Length: 102
Image (tube, rainbow, N blue to C red; front, top):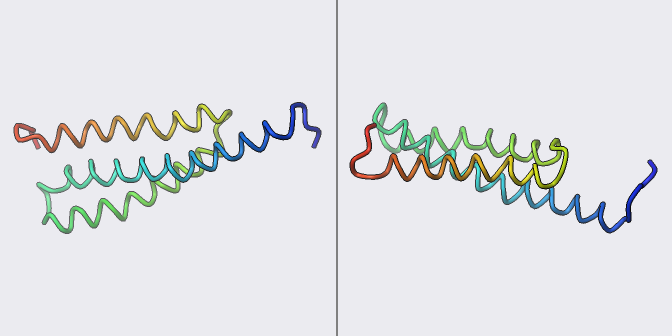
């Protein structure tokens, strides 16, 4: 493999993607668990809703980690993990509010 730019940039890119996989994946999994548990709560017991959401959040974490290394650049790796996490976090806040329809 021929490197076309300095080695430190390559290593920084890999370090950034690793952090995006670990930290961004954690943020996405936490947001998925929060939003999904609030969506499942009316349909089942609260403890079952939370446990189901947490177990399904592991799939989101794995997908986020895979996406971090599949993305074309480190910026898209971060954006692909954090933007859905922010959207799901906002959804969880809306569902948690007292006047929410759910």
